[in-house]
Length: 278
Ligand SMILES: [Zn+2]
Image 1 (cartoon, protein in one colour):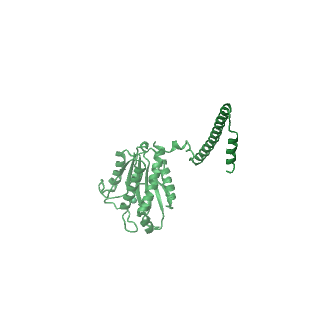
Image 2 (image 1 turned 120 degrees about the horizontal axis):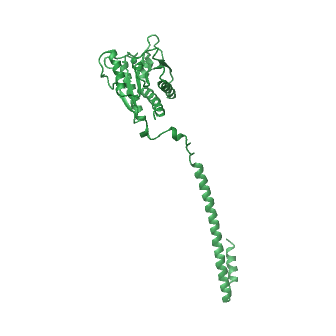
Image 3 (image 1 turned 180 degrees about the vertical axis):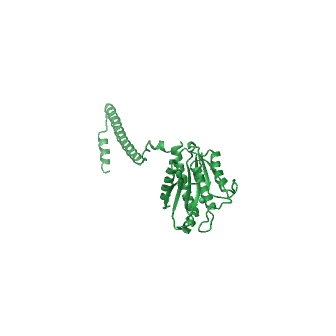
C-alpha cells in the first residue's frame, strides 16, 4: 500500500511533453495495459483449469462404482418379463377333515389355510405373472366327505390348471415325542426341483432366524397320495413344524412366524422359477 503514492509520482515525472512523446507514451501505455490484461487472463485461465481438475477429481471419487456387467444377466428388475407359471397351493385338510388337533387345541386345517394363503400372497407379490390356484380358500371344500375323493380332487385341481408346481401345507404331529422341533418336506425321490427348493427354503429360514432341523423325506418310504399321484410337476408336502409340541404349536400360529415361513418358501420358489422357467 505504501508504494502506491511513489508509483503515481514516478508516472507524473515521466509525463510526456511533445506531441510525438505523447503518442509514444500513449502507445506504450496501451501495450502495457494489453500485457496486464493478457497476464490476468493467463492467471484466470490457470485458476479455472485447476478448479476444473479438482471438481473432476471429486466427482470421480464420489461416483458409485460401475455395476458389473454380468449382474445384468442374472437379475431382471422388469417384473413384466417374469415367467407366467401356475402354482397349485394346497392347504392341507379342510371342511369335514380337521387334520391334527394341535397341542393348544387348534385344528391343523385352520393353520394350513393361513400358511397357504400367506405363501400365495408373497409369491404373487414377487412375481405378478404367476397364477396361483388354491385347492381351497376357506373351510368350504369342493370335494365330498371322503378321504380318497378328497385327495383325488386336490390332484385333479392341479391337473385341470395345468399347474407347473404343487405345494401342500401341513402341520406335523408326533405322539411319541412332543418336544420335536423340526420341519419336513415330502417329495418324490427323483423330483430334483422340489429337493432344490426345499433346501433353499431351509437356507432362507436360517437367514430369517428360524433355526430348526429339517428332513427331506421320499414319498417312496412315506406314501402321500397328493405327491405320488401328481404328474411330472415338481410337488412337495411341507410340514411346517410339529403342532404336538405346545411351544411350537403356539409359535407356528404367530402371524410374524407364519409370514416368516411363508415368505421363505415363496422366495425359494420365486428364485427357482426365475432361474428355471425364464
Ligand atoms: Zn396334515
